[in-house]
Length: 276
Length: 86
Image 1 (cartoon, each protein chain N blue to C red):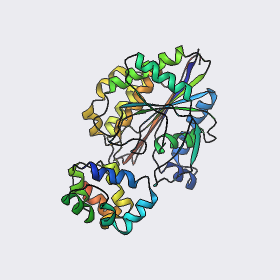
Image 2: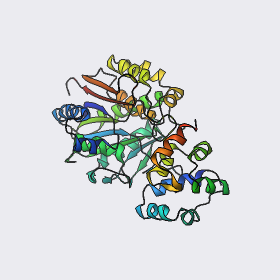
Image 3: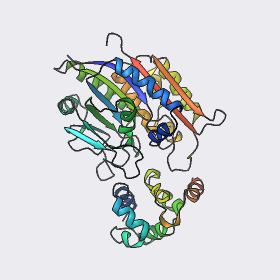
Image 4: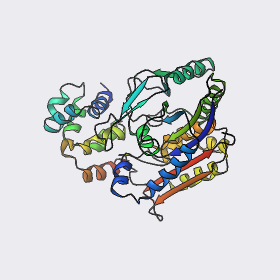
């Protein structure tokens, strides 16, 4: 049987690869290296990544709340504004197709996508964590940007369902889980350059103590809107917590700068799985 | 037509370097291919990002106005206009 061996949460700001190239001492470089070391130590065979498309793979014409990638391979980032290398990666298609079927049988009406245009929300984390792209990915897209968003509770349940799927999957795979996204961020909107520091601190506190139920209850649509138009990406973290069985993190750091009146907030976390 | 056509223009622009180049050089011509209303077209051509935001364009898409300098929008003017749009 397959099993979950580690979970990690990281932001995916599209300027990170350039920042890291220009300043190897940048804090995010150290944060990503810490997370990468934990991920590598867990020796995953598959990387399940909860991520949110940024109008690259999906648009308002077809906009699923949840979608599982079932392609054989994928590449990107496809947005022309990219400022990072182009990558091609294998996709764990059999795993994804199994998840799609298991989800539907479990009353999760997932969408499936056999063709994927990956964007920076998937590839910035992989750029830093698995730049060789040797581990097949299993992307699970959660609509975290284009309202109406799925409820936090439903995303948490999705995570639980995914864990059950992994644990019954007829394969001996070691599955690492990545949550990609920001807790508070506004892109191109009226609140640009402002961070809901109180919310970031609250989310980190709840995650640090493994209080997923409270996190879910407090992650209302209103709160996610208040924290910025990219803040629905927290749903990726919440789904991951469901998959990890609501464990406490072994590493969790939030950097908000400048400290007095933060304009950016980057949260990095590792959930080591006992017995993984 | 709803704001959907404007959003679709930005969506396609974000994936197509050729379309982006055409939009930067002759936005009016490119918009002929989209079912935008007169008011939407006027807002796009004049770089009125506040109006487009209020019309319902997602800020992730609208951000292309500044990224590509459409309608005379600069990074600075975009920031000032969008902050005033709330």
